[in-house]
Image 1 (cartoon, rainbow, N blue to C red):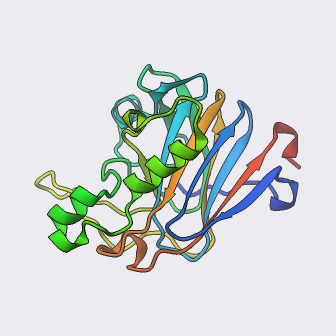
Image 2: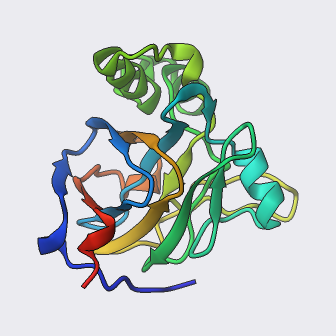
Length: 216
């Protein structure tokens, strides 16, 4: 569902660019609003959210899909944790739908899907691991689980399979979420070059955070 936000970037308490293929890990406090902007369009943003008090209580695609009865995420979707906590709620979305079935690319999946020589290519799982190593605070590779692919187009075929298709996003499209509890956000701004999820050309994204009093 397409919905716009009243929030102005000039009122944000954080405004940061994540370069193409890079990562980001940051805490978002309860009540703050978090926005991801697809600056140039057709960029997949692989994202995991954690309960800030317990890394083991992370985003659950299964719980989220079960609770909302839909496989795609958009305005109104509640992002649930493994223990059933509502981590965030999507409050604005100018793209329309986001994938949470396709998973994150890894060296192994790149070899299986594309070619053995793709093993050394930069991938989202490696970015996740690098970010949690730098962030510290008890996170480990065991905490890298199911993720959301914001802006990524992964249709489900009539036979129940998944395909990676050309994006449904465009330059300047954004998705915005309200944190319902203290959460930690882990992003891999996907470096994938082998399928059209990034239009074969990874590009930067922008992240912004507003405090509750940032509303006009």
